[in-house]
Image 1 (cartoon, helix red, strand yellow):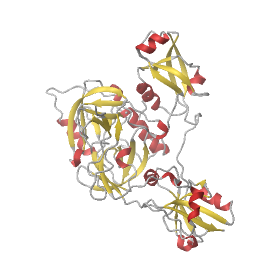
Image 2 (cartoon, helix red, strand yellow):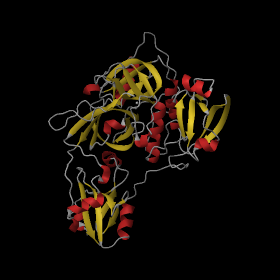
Image 3 (cartoon, helix red, strand yellow):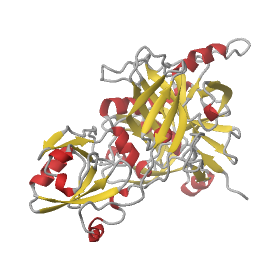
Image 4 (cartoon, one colour):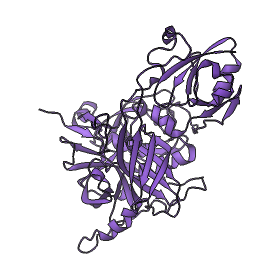
Length: 493
């Protein structure tokens, strides 16, 4: 029996080499309140998240919602340049491959040019757009086609593989933008519209109902296996190209970002999944404020309570999640939670599944306090827990690539978010003006991205400055070019 495959619906028009389709689908075997605000005065949301309860119009008229939403949903096209497969060793001997290793840089090369497409939603009138990370992942160039047919270049503000979300910016103002609706208020059986660009059919609107909430389909592995899945499941028709598009209620409020479909054929087969707006608004807010998503952790390993576990542990409920273990010094441990406790509520919100627990905790940042209700010996208790980050402290992590500096006549620049995303890097430094510097004799070219100096990782221009100041004589520099070629150079100081 053929295993069902979950497919991230993305690009239809992907070509590679002789026209082979690539990049649009990720095939996986079946096993996937805070209000968005910002301190950046250049970002203007059209509204806060609305607690809008939908009243179905007489005759079930979808026209008003469709007319209001369609202008704010854009078509996103991406371009992927040719990647070179060969390595370059500059003016160095090939034996230096052993110094850095064959897997230096961790960059996986693509072969052949490719194009892709997906959808996006304007969430601020001055050009901020939310989409799926897999729509723009590793793209060299991102273009946005508006509903009025304008074409604008887009830059990547930030991306979060753990939720499969990304934020883009286009240079435009007075754009139509969608309001956030409160996904917590969405009810199973409620009518919703999916708006996007399936099969490059621009501004396509489909309708369906909410089939389930808090759905985990094991499709988002994310970074460090910390993917967050608590999807809204609908039967609105969603196909490749819809990814990153809007899921809205009949008021026209954004309640989700369409992300995935379950199918055996590659096309819509009755099930689609959207990231709820409660998660979208928090991720967008973090990326705009800090440049990084602030992931808060409770620090527990859990399993859902079922009949078997309830009988084994003599638990008098089938709701909640069972704590199997706690990390030392974690938020849960410090709050007094213990192995064997059953978490039933977070801040008064009922918790029945692991996905629901993940979704509730994901709305907060390290340092935030949450109220955890749990059962111990079948007696209800409540504690306050101060959430922590993955380093097990409460600090907010900000993205700070540093500023351009000049060393020996060459300029060293931090990488952009788009460059980091393209090469799956956490840092790196681009060199320019090589010919007018002391680096010209190495054979290095402008645009080279330095990743290591004498096997020490380089993430910012300050790292280059420090490492070069600390070393004399022969210095080994490794990195990659924008076309993916790895290269190694020897510098004498």
